[in-house]
Length: 248
Image 1 (cartoon, rainbow, N blue to C red):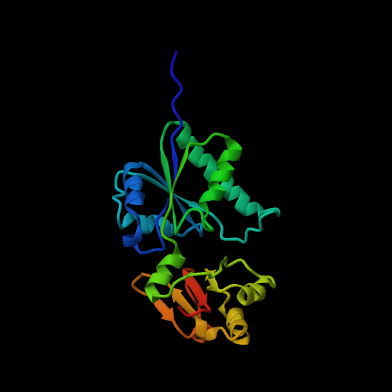
Image 2 (cartoon, rainbow, N blue to C red):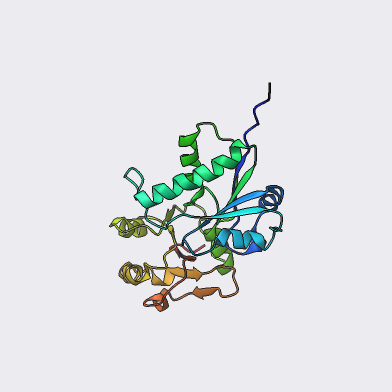
């Protein structure tokens, strides 16, 4: 009797905020030893930022690299998701599952850390709906906010600070309450929001406490110590806003 192949392992690999030198040793090792890589991309005819960053540290020549589209649309937990997004998750999950069931390990490189607003766990959840027992290993990565904090030498949280991390998808009245209530606030991927955020910061007297970092750690990095300069600008997707009220 033929033995059933052992299912491969899915590696959800955080590759950091964009600077290849900020990939962890473990992330590099796992990507080097895994033959199949599946990289997320936002556009059908685009490329995977995660794969491009990983390729700066990992030799891709003998690997099977698949770049699958994950549409960038708002996800509201507890509500029905956009059918296009759900279909993309399912197609990606079926592709990955095909390799896993053949005993092949699969690595899914993702920007930042897999546990923080990443596509990685949507993929894992969809896989688990197809097959309840998935062998998975999560490799944490350096977050964009950690890299931005280091770049401008400003802490995210100290002492009794209460910190709030807010995704780009916010479009309700909670932001005003968050900015009023928390000592330190990280606003992620704010590239389309600054025209509305800056007036709110001015109203709450927080402009002097805010700094925006665009494409942190990359060759064309920009730091806006006066966030009013971002109004009307076309910012890159990799834009993070740090707001810290208290002095050390």
